[in-house]
Length: 283
Image (cartoon, rainbow, N blue to C red; front, side):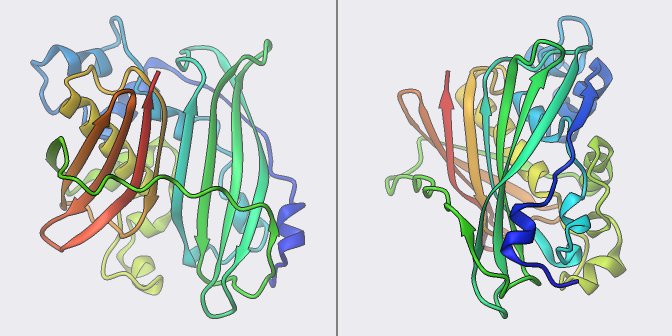
């Protein structure tokens, strides 16, 4: 069905609840690179239930409202992730009820043949206290829904990475089964596993979840900076600029300026930049 900016801005995004277990946290960590060095103490802190240290980017997949944009009439098959901004207010607790509430922020119409950008915010709190845990601002590129009109106030752009040579680079090969594992965190979109569905969406084969690439970038930042993952991160964001396929090798360029970190993720074998405008802030 045809949608309008107004109908999407007013769509009642459902609340979502979840209690995160140690098993959930470990599954997520394994799906974004942790555990590849099982004798490394920093890796074990993320994948062993004893004294478990939760990966901050886990908040991206917690208490998710599901495919509500599909219910709102967006062409689900032609939707891709465009940008993600995650603010961590406090560490994500285990075995505590969590609630998320979402609201639309803006629609930017690029024309009937170019699609539109839809940006919404999801806030995660504990129950019953409603203590803030994380705020997620997500932008989706809805490639089949242009001409719907614009609404709301667009976000300020992310800061570009510095023009100088990067301070560090971390390389990691994404496993060929990465999407099959990552989808168990809750994103069951067939685009990431079904070759026929991916072909209908215009891709030669299933693509990696954007937030899986995002998680791998966070993992790379922690490894490159010598921290226990990204335990001290208060904010992390990036723009998705090209797809990643399971089996690709990621090279993450990292710049450090005091508590500010900038990053970019490349796929050198295909000559593309997968993540750009990467911004992180250490708390």
